[in-house]
Length: 333
Ligand SMILES: NC(=O)c1ccc[n+]([C@@H]2O[C@H](COP(=O)([O-])OP(=O)(O)OC[C@H]3O[C@@H](n4cnc5c(N)ncnc54)[C@H](O)[C@@H]3O)[C@@H](O)[C@H]2O)c1
Ligand SMILES: O=P(O)(O)OC[C@H](O)CO
Image 1 (cartoon, rainbow, N blue to C red):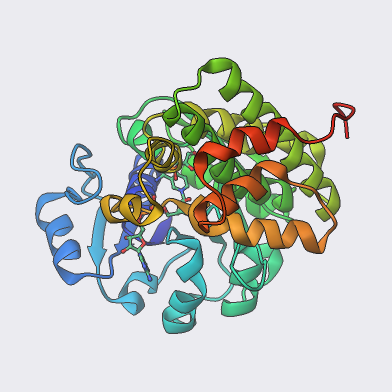
Image 2: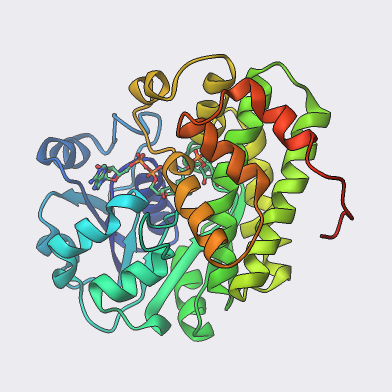
């Protein structure tokens, strides 16, 4: 039985712990707060995040990172992107050597413009051929309800990707292996910003033509960034690209989508943050994605507009006009 350590006991870390357990792993979940770990051990439920999910007996929890990491044959990281480096600086030295380290995060680090796999490599010294990315249309509440879904397991070393895919293959969770780590990570990070834009459009009262237009042109700007950074275009047409883009942009369960809806309805960023208890990665990563695009000479008009709204440089009601009134161009450019 593979022993897996999951760091981050929020929505996705908890749902992924259940996937691993249902795939036959013994799982230790690391929670920052002792009372959360104790409640999970006592009740087999993480009430603050996924109260409807009863965790199997093979999932236990601890607030001690050394204890979580001890003997792990597989490490999973499911914490907010902008706090990953601080977390790894604090307990990354406990991670066992020579085991796959899986990123579930969907963001780009502010300041450095690094993808999460790059942060893991740099901050925890994990060799790149042991860093794995799992990304796809995986809304945690649907996964927790054991509704069928698939995902991409990407690693530069295909045998490591296959090892991780084997460990997380559950009856309701179907992994597909990949070697395009860059494409998988960009698809996951940029779709959050596009989902904010779709949410804003919905909040402003626009319908499905508008939303489909944003999704499709959002995919176009993701593909341009991917091309500049060496991603395989096919990855962005797959589960980690268009698959996740559709799920996140269309679902009321998406935190990014919901955040955008509230902005479109006229709430301020601060007001939405105040009522949002979970991570909406696009709000922080819009700036880092835009900086990464600028450094690579890539035009990302939807990300530019979303960032302007998030940073108070533009009223949400101006976003549509700004996007519609740009010079006309060929669809492929
Ligand atoms: N929830 C989903 O449906 C889902 C699906 C796929 C990917 N993801 C990605 O997984 C990552 C984690 O998302 P989530 O939904 O589990 O988030 P969440 O907000 O539900 O949970 C975040 C977890 O990280 C912990 N954490 C550690 N250090 C922290 C810090 N300094 N500040 C705040 N929290 C800290 C929190 O305690 C919490 O357990 C994100 O990058 C997200 O985009 C989420
Ligand atoms: O709730 P969101 O917007 O963070 O999206 C969750 C997942 O990334 C969907 O695949």
